[in-house]
Length: 151
Image (cartoon, rainbow, N blue to C red; front, top):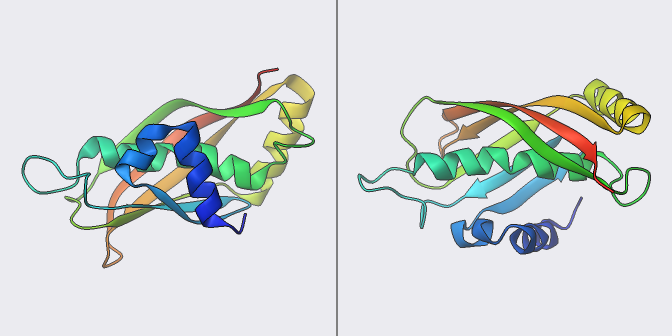
């Protein structure tokens, strides 16, 4: 993926609430992706970023990283990424714009691809962290996702 604006627009069409939140893709490639979450309109009633918005910024990476890592238009056409479980740890209040980055290893990409082609599905774990403008980690998430054949 190199056209992040096009990826952002596609994401907003697939999941319109992400557009209202202002989430945008700023980096994506095999095994990783980063989205930006702007402070406005994602603030809460006491002036920090809303916990649900922070969760969403992490959770959406469970779809973006697979799109950047697997051939979902070719070899794995008909497969979709789904979230199964997610646990987030809020470490500090979020102030200002933040970025969430999710990663999976090259070995995990190879394993998931092979298992999905063999069985029609494969679980994978994605680690995500959110950093503020100073590079301080304000939240982490560990999510179990699944690449699953739907058609």
